[in-house]
Structure formats: structure tokens, C-alpha cells
View 1 (cartoon, rainbow, N blue to C red):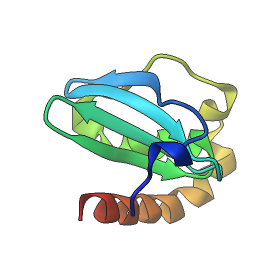
View 2: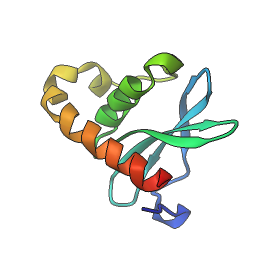
View 3: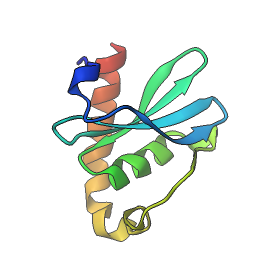
Length: 103
């Protein structure tokens, strides 16, 4: 899986940081949201989902030891009970995206 710059809706936006680097949000023209870590030595996917709040939540789960801190929050980020049932599905999808991009 390759995602080229012309497939993105807009330029990546810095939305947070970890002790290993900056965290960016990207949305494809099809509406797929990616939360990515850009460190000094690597770039990797932390979360992927069709909704930004789910992608951010999965990224937070995937970066437990990295102390992920977001610069801005939205109302949807706080309403985890609404999308809790979707988390396992998109955690699995995120794992597949990570395997494809790093494989």
C-alpha cells in the first residue's frame, strides 16, 4: 500500500507529539484518516480509521510508552462510548495498514 501526496485531501497537519517525534494527521481524498509519527529515524502509522476521533484513539492506544499528547481536542474525541464498539475493527485495520506500509 502506497499513499502518494496527490491522494491526500490536504497537507499533513501537526496534531501532537511523543517523546520520539511529531504526530501528524492526514486525510485521503476518500476520507480515510491516518495518524502518523514522524521521528528522527522513522515514520510510522499510529492509527487509521474513517473517522478522525477513532484514528486518534487508536493512535493513543498504540503509543502507550511514547506519551502521545495532542495539541487540540474535539468533542468527538471525548465521546468514546459512541464509537467504542468500532475500536477492535479499526485496531485490526491499523495493524494491516502498518504491515502494508512497513512491509
